[in-house]
Image 1 (cartoon, rainbow over the protein chains, first blue to last red):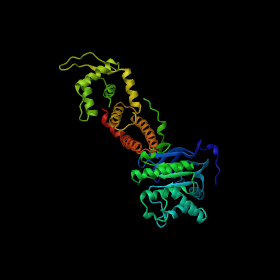
Image 2: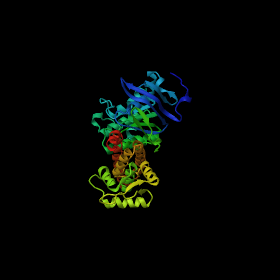
Image 3: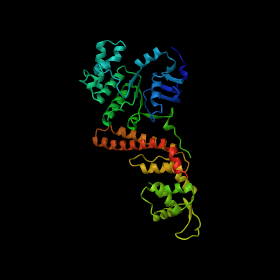
Image 4: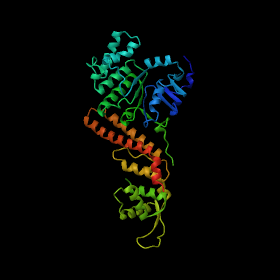
Length: 238
Length: 174
């Protein structure tokens, strides 16, 4: 594992990107994107479709490797880690919630939530006790034995949230977590996500096109044409 | 929407007669509700009284009085302040935002930056309303929801308009 200088990390941030460039074939997705997210901060990433916001999230989470630029996590260069180290980090320090279908359909809700713990060699009994506790926190008591196909969209998304949080990640990455839900259900999921993140001190990076979701965050940034734009930094002048 | 400020914007573009102001106002901002001549001249009178415009000498010609009005530094400053400051985020802002964007483009002002500033103000207000929803009173929650959904609609309009600024600029610049 590379041991980069901590002094070069974006100041005061837990996770960040610096001048990140990422293309898919000839198509540029990020063209020098920079962002810093403080520990415990809830950051909303907004922007038009195709602007690069999901690519930025995937780079921050170590799922994509940037073509150029730097990704920092907890004072270390994430983009310089080996694939094995990044996978380990994703399993232990990061949680993920996506818009659709990340649950394993053959398994029950409790199995899905316990899965990350079992993969990290937690004893079966402990894993299922923790899974049940998280299902309780997400107001899903009594639904642990249901298969994912027997859950409503909102319930399935809360199971996904429980699975993302069960490892007590330092950073939760959420990509359009309410995108497939109606307004009221989406609001419930966001309330739970933000409430639990604040209780746990989890840093959250949430990609959304919904302003009501962004309004739950501490701060929002816009991604436009592959660059990060901080609306709060705008100066109006003639 | 502020008719006086809109007229100041049209006068900053170029000094105009009253009838030209009415014509341009009706073309860009009237949308089926033409500005009465009486209101045009009454507004110009008040703007002149307050030092925001000055009227030139009466020009010869048939018909109504023909004076060309010119915006003053005071008027231009007031216009700039209005354009650059976000409107208080509240429901039904569409007309104000629409007017600001069209005028900004006509005057080659940074319309995108004005929209960005408005966006920040809207999201800040939406955060306040989201916080207000923590109330146990369901009526408070419903009131906050009403504001949130309307502000969200404004934000969608802001985003779509920002994406269309280049095309819109071509349409409104002569």
